[in-house]
Length: 116
Image (cartoon, rainbow, N blue to C red):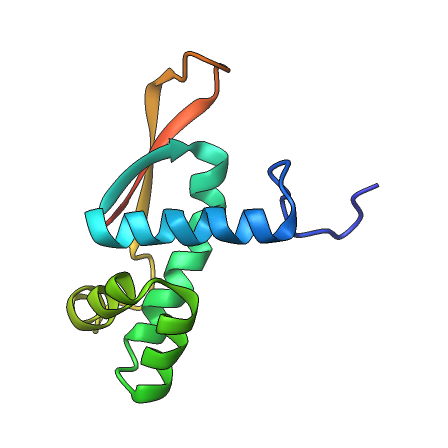
């Protein structure tokens, strides 16, 4: 039974799930827009929002935390390029748009997640 469980397992173990969303975060930061399933996009959104909010502080502690959670290239890009654009914005840095076509293999609903 899944009472009060806030973690969506995506049929993966903890380490695999963390690696999956670390890779998705890296891809989103480096490319600005990625296409993935709607469930993964909805799970990724709060992760990215928290990272951008942390990067907006522009101090050494936040930079070190970003480097710990992301690959160094994406952490530096988030800290130096993306976060300063959202300095005056109070949240809502990403947008999820559902695509009309579903994935052919398993008929999964696809979405695009991008920075606004």
